Amino acid sequence: MKLAIGNMLGAQIMTSCEKYLGLPMVGGKSKVSTFREVQERVTKKVMGWKEKNISKAGREVLIKTVAQAIPTYSMSMFKIPKRICDDINSVLAKYWWGQTRDEKKIHWIKWGKLCNSKDRGGMGFRDIHAFNLAMLAKQAWRLIQGGHSLFFRVYKTRYFPTCSFMEAGLGSNPSYVWRSLLEARDLITAATVWKVGDGKSIKLEDHRWLPHPPKFQPNANRSLRVSDLFDPCTKQWHTHVLHTNFMQSTVEDIQRVDLRNTHSKDELLWRENKKGTFSVKTAYQVAIRQQQQEKGESSSTRDVRRMWNCLWQLHIPPKVRNFVWRACSDILPTRTNLCRRKVPLDPVCEICQKQNETVAHALWSCPMARNVWALVSGKLQKRSSEAEDIYTLVRELMAVLSTKELEIQFFQRVGEKNLLLAESLVNVTRLALV
Ligand SMILES: [Zn+2]
Image 1: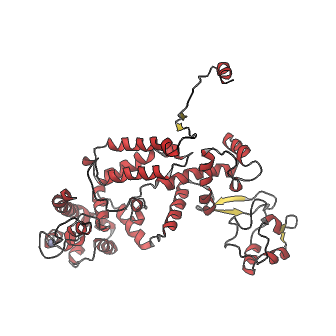
Image 2 (image 1 turned 120 degrees about the horizontal axis):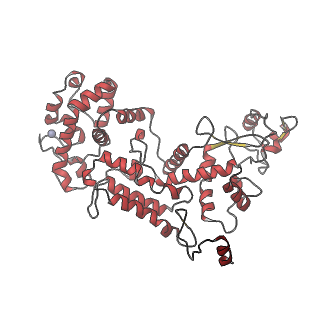
């Protein structure tokens, strides 16, 4: 049969097929081994870069534009196993911290934190798992919107002929693509609201269609749909049905729902942007938010975000920006920080022999640093020589200096020299030990 069709169409017959249109064929094989190739491609790319000659700012660009873009294609259709995501992250983290094959380097901040956006104090690297979900959500959103595409028609017929994508089950013998698409459903539920039309697609309990989660009466019939609650001809709510099933506050919420569109279908709106339309960018933000909620992380305050934004927007060399970021995050290899990491050495500053060498001491309070700062005229000179930490100091400076002043006085004219001098002092003596 295969042969006959092949001959008829003049097509080549393959006995086994590893790839189709550049995507792996996911059969019975272990998913991890199928997607291992994606990770190997990232590793190969990263190994090819001579990391010693590239600054952290340069490595940031390479990771973001090249390495993290490699898995994008596969991620648009398949859920990449967690283990592969973790391994890719680990390859990138080693590269970022300047680790070559067998060396050990201190990873001063966890990769998960580096994946925070820059205004949250991270480096804005892409969290691969979250991005994967956002890409899958994009395909899932196409299935929700319907239309005439072949993709929609095939999946609709095969997996959800009688209901909507949001209600579809796994079905018998599902493909890996279908399983992957269903993984994105939680993300979509969290990021959408229903605009009530005929009410037939909206289950009372499962879907978000009210401003607050509904509060039911003890004997409520929870299997009803929104269409059971109103009369489509008169466009009036069945008041007695509402009162038998819901508490008063929910009844009031329901009565505020607009019933003008009962002749059209219910519509799922993306509530992450004003237009109500889906975008991968906002879906990614939702995925990150969900991860943070799972880990119990709190979100940064507006003040903190303003400070990081201000730093990253300064027109100063990227290398210096990156250095200031590391100083503010308290992750420079000063003696105190190295002691904290169990490197056996004396935490006292080598230059003044008086205080422990913290980041604030090395860059600001130490007499050596004071001498350099004394060269800067103006507001900077009047500041106290004491600084709790560099983060607080930079934040205070941002409050009193204009952006131009910050750029010129603090970072460019003397600042760059001073910061790089301090960096070299800290680095030359200690990086060898790490
Ligand atoms: Zn000192």
